[in-house]
Length: 284
Length: 284
Image (cartoon, rainbow over all chains, first blue to last red; front, side, top):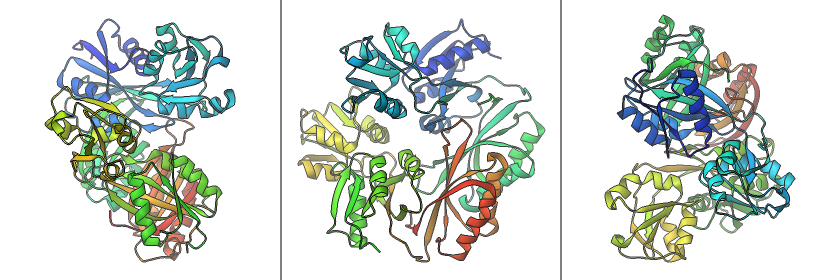
């Protein structure tokens, strides 16, 4: 199914959680020997994979604390679903570490990281350090780790263990996130055709003909056919406050008769519908 | 209804869109003479208003392009709904301007702003400037405007017109957002009791007993009672991927018999439910 692929692109920089997800996909799909390159944004990954049939992408789609990755949803919406789709998913545990040039945690005066990572470790920071520790926001956890190289020994970064390895830094504390079950779901986007495994999900996006009653009618179709919904979310249509696009994941593969039937039935109450992908489910 | 209030707090800094919303609320509610202070985060505003009966807050809740303000939703969820609730809403148009010390747009080489504002003006930037213009991310549009004071004349900021007035800067271009209908909805949070106006909405958050079928059952109650849903969204429960809290706005005031009845009925399928507020609707 993946013989035409020549390159895998993923969200960088080196040592990102998305790189870990990419490695997991490559191992599972037998793609280790294919060219690999990291890209700076989800948008650029989706655009490149859409334009080049021999390129597949790996992008984050949902985090258990922060919720859906908006850049991913908004850009998947603009893709022609006859070409590029989600063809696999995986879940990566997020294990925030405190890393530094220093070996001594007591000498740390400043912590740098992405605002979300800082927010996710506030209890740890307040328990471990005095009130006057300075927290400085950076654009990603991996960039924060990279920047440590040019900063003094009183700096530490919140990043993942892989970052410490790449830059030869010390891990001062592991798994410092306040919520222990911090996970991110990543998806593989490609032109591959998936086959039903018996444990699949289908992801769709749609707008309803009339937001009020129509959404309930759409959801009722799933209920009446005993199809489990796995996920529902809304994003603004970007036209007006109060107009939404809905995202829905449900059990079943697009090749199943039951899935084809439910899609036909909900079209009675949607003004547009896009199949984002149909692929093997991972237990979350 | 507001005689006990001694202070209004809102999301700063000076010249923020939230300040514009605060001014609108103060005018409408006759609170102009009350003490006013801006706070750095939504979380601190909600905490202060919850702890102090004589403090009300103004916070952003939803933008037409970006969607719901997650910090607002997550922090409203932790509030005791017997004390603090949403008691009013207003909608403010977002009008991004290019402002600078310079009068000449041709001399601009660097643009600073919040990443969302930069993203919302990409078409304008690409049409107006050559490819090599540098774009630098700052933590807010207002902070970007403030920073201009210490930067050279080749810098411009994307911010609102109020910022230009505050710092005596020039407006080089107005309404530069790519999507013309960029609006943000703000809410007033207080201990005020609202009364039904005949054109109200009630905002609730709930978790279902079983995410799959129960959500449909909850929505069906609204459908069967012909109550229009105005908004639905989900946020992760923060416990596990796949577990969600749902946010729902619907037509009606908490003092209506019909609203009381629908809330009683949906409780059959929710494991917990919180009333975020019941207040006069603004046309969006």
